[in-house]
Image (tube, rainbow, N blue to C red; front, side, top):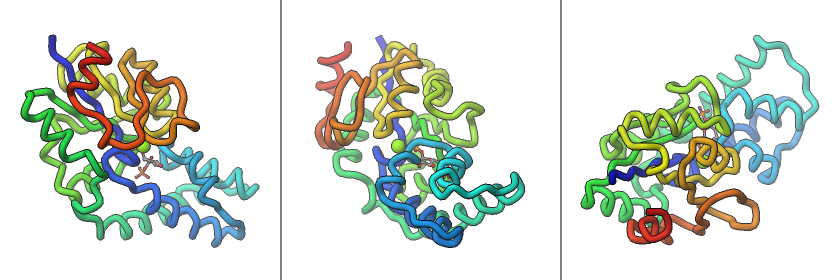
Length: 216
Ligand code: G16
Ligand code: MG
């Protein structure tokens, strides 16, 4: 039976959270309030516009829809500037080894990210061509925790959803994977993530034999 793996991008393949954080923080300061690392946790896995709405809520700032578009564009301009300096040294530990293991064993894998900048990031870190399919913020209508991004990934790989394993670092993404009817591995702090089928601290802690033993 064919299995497939679906990867979230930010926080699983590469750590772009710090770049997002600095761009949002600068925006908050321009709007006259402070934005902390703890606040930033709430934006992980969340779409750009939803992130802006959370940020404005934290700062108790009310703006028009047109201003929201301007603010989101301003944040994204800075974010893109800051990720333009990324290279393969920013691929998170364990990722390259695991992807090579999947390739060797002919296990297809896809990206399932909320980010509209996902193709650019993959290109910067040299992984654009490694993925069999890329589903990102440009391909979806409904953001995580909606399962759409992962269901599209399974479709693109032509693998049944129950034979797909999702790697996620965000609570919204874990929920999306479970709602898609897939196996979900939570990557990161076990104390803040719930509802997954397996928990690992880093991608160094997974392997094909581990997921096969656990799930298939
Ligand atoms: C990522 C991040 C989120 C970010 C979102 C949208 O998703 O985790 O913090 O807000 O993408 O990003 P952009 O503004 O680049 O479209 P994921 O699903 O890869 O973790
Ligand atoms: Mg993520």
